[in-house]
Image 1: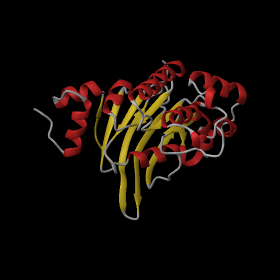
Image 2: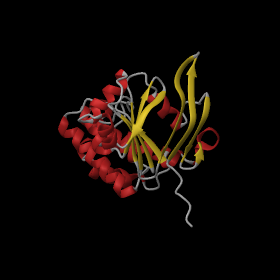
Image 3: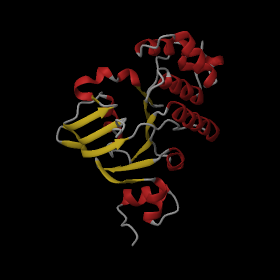
Image 4: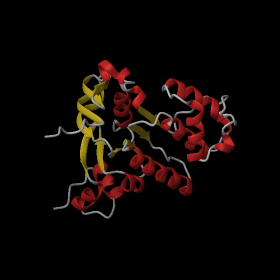
Length: 249
């Protein structure tokens, strides 16, 4: 009898408080290998703090996080090369060129053939024309593609995304989503996606978790949640949860 695969993420009674203020209040969830899990919630719901604890950047007040079977509180160094993160709100050094930035990050992640990997990313993400341009001189769409290249430089098994298409035009956003779908299928990567774009979440996510005031308010397959709440789409479900609307009988 084969054992079940180790989850990409396993969160148990995870909690974080700052000076008596509760940011995350003892949550539990898992993300399977190859799964896209949406992490939803309004501003202040605890999404960013949860992601930071999963990455090992913030120490939990209580509970545990295991990533690819590794306890992030004790042995995160064993798994850091197998995960990565992307957010349009985190800038790369502006004075460095795109190539220089990607070279630095590839080195940090221990990529073996850096030049070949950057060339592959430039081809995949249409970056050839901006590789030698300072990162601070890029358009919003170019910055997003470069940020995605940085996030994929080590071909991670787990990709953490914080609003990856925020402020992008519809065409560029669709291009990014398509590339993420292709990467997930090719690599069988797990993706944790925090987003306020409910159409994006419905398209990409196998399951979603909706957080409110640091707790998990509801979770499930997007289509199942829409049906259970008697709504037309996930955005209406999100609004019901955010506003405390009761489930339809």
